[in-house]
Image (cartoon, rainbow, N blue to C red; front, top):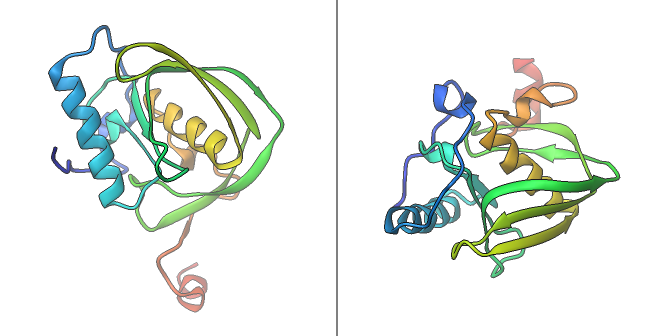
Length: 163
């Protein structure tokens, strides 16, 4: 396993649509392992393959410590409700913004053994699924931010001065 470089806003790969995974290969397994290691090292809860420079429809998520999810070729098949909350992204370090997302989602995907799975999520898991699946279509959360982005790595008084 290896920690990969996380691509940041401005890198063209983050705006591209990813291709479906057709079969599990040793390289894809290594990619998934690397994605988890990279996500944990960066203190993230989700990571999509384009964020590490790979245009494949693969997402890893771990919002419930100890229950890591691998979603290959994921698709949201049902969503309802609404939640508005703060989001950040490993590809936009030091920034966050409020985004409206569904309160509940149902996602169909393949697991790391290419078996069909259905994942149902609410609250943070629903938000994370939506956020990471957006990455697979070249969408960044900043595109959806209600009132734009703000710095979250500055003390409040310095953030006001910068505005």
